[in-house]
Amino acid sequence: MLDRAPRQNQPPADATAETRPVKFRGGGFIPGTGRYGGWIALAAAIVLWQLADSIALVNPLFLPAPLSIARAIYQLALSGALWHHLSYSLMRIGVGWVLGTAAGVATGFAVGLSSLARSVGITFISALFPIPKIALLPLLILWLGIGEEPKIATIALGVFFSTAISVYSGVDAVPRNLIRMAQSFNVPFSTIVWKVIWPGALPSILAGFRITASVALLLVVSAEMIGAEYGIGAFVLQAGNLMQTDQLLAGVVILSVFGLVVGRLINLLETRLLHWR
Amino acid sequence: MDLIADHISHCFGTLEVLDDVSFTVGAGEVVAIVGPSGCGKSTLLSILGGLLQPGAGAAELRGAPPQDSLNPLTFVFQDFALLPWSTVEANVEFPLLHTGLAVAERRALVDDALRRTGLVDFRGTYPKQLSGGMRQRVGIARALAVRPAILLMDEPLSALDSQTRELLMEDFIRLLADGAMGAAYVTHNLEEAVRLADRIVVLSRRPGRVREVVPIAMTRAERGDIAARGKLLALQNELWSLIRTEAIDAEREVQHA
Image (cartoon, one colour):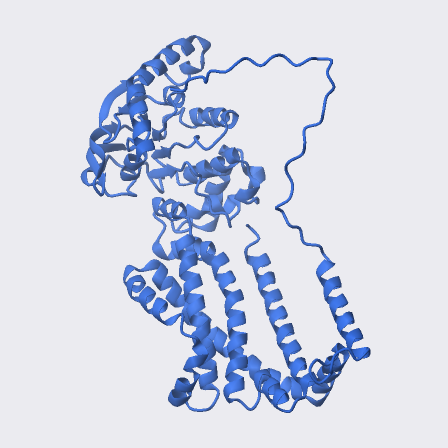
C-alpha cells in the first residue's frame, strides 16, 4: 500500500512570468576515438625525438634518433639478417602458439562441459597458471635438450593456461537459456556444443587470443635472450651487449610492429566472426 | 495427445516450490496457469516440458502425437532464447537441423513458419536488429516449424510493451483457433489468461498447489465481441480476488528474502 506524503499543493505558475531553459545535465562519460588523433600524436612524438637528437639534446648512444633506427632496420633488411632472426622467432611463436592454443581450447571445453574435468582441471590450472613460464625454461632445457623444443614448449605452456581459462570462462558465460532452448528441441549434445556453445564462447576465446599473442611474444623474446643464437630476442640482447643501441631499438621496433600486425589480424577475425554483436 | 501433471511436487534445496499439482492439458486445449509471484508456475512448466526432474510425481503424455509432429512439446520462452549469431531464418531452422529431414523439406517448414508469423521479409536479419515483438515472433515461428502438439508458453508476452502484447495476443488467438495445437500458458497477466484459455489453473502461493480450476465457457472467437467484455472482466476480477491476498503476502515474502 502506498500512502501519499503530507505536503502542500503547488501554487500554479504565473503564465506571464519569464521562461528559462532547463539546464542540460547529460553528456560526458562516452569518450570518443578520433580517426587520426593517435597517429598525429605519434608522428609529433617522433618528430620531437628527431629534433632533440638534431640539436644534440640527447646522447645518441643512449637514445638513437628515429632516422638512425630506420636506417638500421633498412640495413638489416638489406643484409638478410632481419629475415633470418625474424624467421626463427616466427617459427617458435607459430608452433608454440598453435600447440598451446589447441591444447588450451580442448582443455577449456572439457573443463567447461564436464564435471570431472572441471574438478580436476580447475585445481591444476589455478595452481600452475601463476608460475612465470620463463622460470621453467631451464627445466625444459634439461628435459628436452638445447634445441628449439624447450623454447617452443615454454611458449606453448604460457599460451595453454591463458587459452584454457578464456575458453572455459567463455563456455561458462554462454547464456543457459540458449542451452535449455536447444535441449527443449531435443538437439543432440554435439550440435549444442557446435551450434550454441562454440559461437557463444567465441567472444571470450578471441579476447584470449589477444592475450596469448602478447604472452607468446613476451616468452619468445625472453627465451631467446636466455638461450638462442638467432631470433629477435637474441639479436636485441646481442646489440645491447655491443652498445649498438640503434640495432637494439630496431629489434624493439620490429617486435612492436609484429604485435600491431597480430592485433590487427585479431581485429579482422573479430569483425568477421562476431559481426552479430 | 494429452499432457498430464500427475501429483507433481518439487523443492529447491529446502525451499518447497510445488506441492501435489495435478491437472491435464487435453488435445487442442489451452490451459492457463496463474498464481502469485514465486508460486512455481515456471518451474511447473519446466517439469511439464522435461527440462526439470520433479522431486515427486511425474509429467506424462497420453495418446500419440500427431504424425507430422517433430517435437510434440515445444517451448516458447519469455526471453525469446534466440541465437544472436544466427539470422531469423537460421534460428527457425535450428531445431530442424538434427531431424534428418532433407534440405528441401526443412526449407519448406521454415518458409511456412515464417509466412505464418509474418517474418518472410525479415529472414536475413539478426535478432539484435529486431524489436522485442518481432523477436518473439521468431520464437513462435521456431516453435511452429517443428509442428508441436502442445506449446509450453512461459510468460511469452511479459517482456513486451502493451501494444506489442496486444498484437501478439491476437496472433496467438489466431494460431490456436483451429484446435490443432494445445497450450500450457503460464502468465501473471489475468487478462491474457481469460482471453486465451479454455481453463485456468489457479495456483496458491509457494508451495504452489492447485487452488481452483476455472473453466471458461466461451469460444475464443466469442470473447472478441464487445458483449463478452463484461463477462470476461467479471471473470478477471473473480480470479484476482482469488489471488490478491496471497499475491500481497508473496510480494512481502520476496522483499524479505
